[in-house]
Length: 112
Image (cartoon, helix red, strand yellow):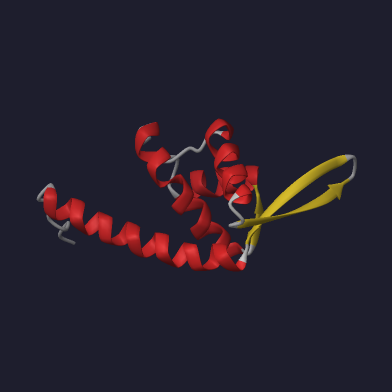
């Protein structure tokens, strides 16, 4: 499992990418998908995820939709038009950052 410091710096980008791919998701679904996709290497806590989701919503990057499932309320998140634009920018920025870090730390690509 990766440190919370590494995850914190990438959480917004992870959330935006997942929402771009899946159109709308609820919080628990996001945490479980990340956990599954990374084979437990990245585990997002509710304490980290929900403040990020709420901040993105406050910035107008996410749109929320509430659904009633029996007696429970489920809040779905999706990207606003501004969020779709930001996602492309964040992914490009992160890819460039990774390339810079590989160069800076002299990390060679793994041989197959």
